[in-house]
Image 1 (tube, helix red, strand yellow):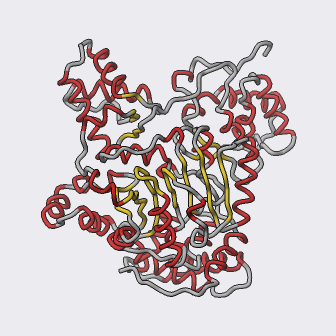
Image 2 (cartoon, helix red, strand yellow; image 1 turned 30 degrees about the vertical axis):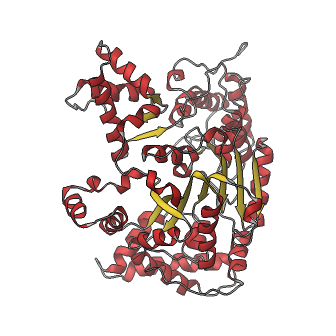
Image 3 (tube, helix red, strand yellow; image 1 turned 135 degrees about the vertical axis):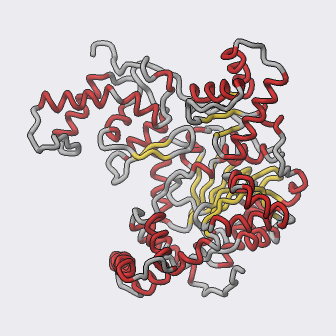
Length: 528
């Protein structure tokens, strides 16, 4: 199904040049976080490495945007990033130095030509947004690296484009490539590629394959930046494959398919009784079943987890509920819904009160007992286990082997130092951002990009308002009325003070502060 082609030796140099000229935005990908990979592996019966002191390799790390949050939150771990582009590595190294991280190493190189034995073994290997965008020989090199470098209990994550979803999307890509041609400049290629989409939308027959492909493109990528269009639609290589072929290729390198980074995608029951009844009767193995599911949902992208083939016999496709008792869970289900079981409802309420932070199984059982005024029996424990299994299968909860908890509250407010430094580092960039304990990237508003760098536990309310007033005076923040009326300095200060006073609530929403601190942590220091 995946066509094998022989590519010129200069192909990888062309890929490198493309990224040097137009660097890819480098962000965190929560589903590739080692904590997520370890938790999923545990659920399926494996004994994954301890994330706390893990060795992590990212192939195609860009500017280390996906490694930095992990390294910052796990100072005893070690992260190595490899990337083709010297521009990516230089920018990533700048960020690592600015954040004061000594557990991140970045290396410019081609994974197909590195001395793998010199790299050592890794507990987790991540390859997001690379596999489909390189020549066939590099795809084999990625899988070979995973097979050679993974520890016996390690987990690899690979994100890649898949059929059948990409069948129709290739129509859009082909039209863009045709229109962009061999234009002299990147800007001209992008302009012509976007122009052909606008043109085809005007002339495509309603309800035609082309019209649906264009609609899908707008829905998925319509708001994407130029860098994404350039490296997704206009990239030299973009070779989707069928899931079954990907698994067969991985097996040739001593690897076995575990599941997806979101395991809920792999359970036929989640797609309704018609799908489940048919596939469970006719698909005689889980690979064939999941390939059928890709047709059911027209899947265009997968985030597959691989382990060493020697581990395959230990994988359990049926969830062992008792393993949930080793885990920590977070969930926020709709409130007010009756589940007909007071134990389940009490557990859901307890999780909601703790959201977005985790509760251990033991704490959750105790919370249920406290809410119902009962002593937790084995029957109560079993009903909690059933709920947690349901949350995993349906994808309604988050789970980890280690707790996810906020920084201790203090007055004035203090962020995790690396998160604060990241906000400071990107403050003047086109897109300022920070990251949280869930490995999520958080874009910052014009106001917050100037506030968060100051949250070092030393600056009170007056200092923060003064800093915003200075930013207004410099023209980097604009405060205007909707009707265009000019505000006085006192009015501007009042508006900014309201922004500062509302900051704790925003930090809660961004999962940077404990929900319990929302009303109890004033942004006031002595003398303010």
